[in-house]
Image (cartoon, rainbow, N blue to C red; front, side, top):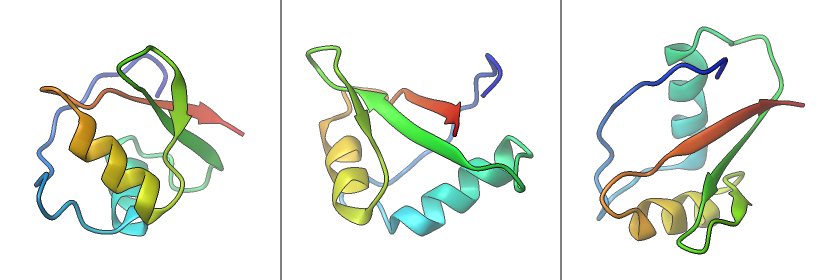
Length: 74
């Protein structure tokens, strides 16, 4: 967010829930009171949303070797 870069680990086999990931992102970037959209670029370069458990799990499982996410204000 705001051209900041952060690194942290997520277990690919047990990525957890989207809500936990969302809270982590909000805390790390200190943007707890903002509405944001989280997305990632797939292997084809398409920007896809991360907005539920299924999308989050797919994003984590297809990350090679890093999952680069994009945070945009809504």
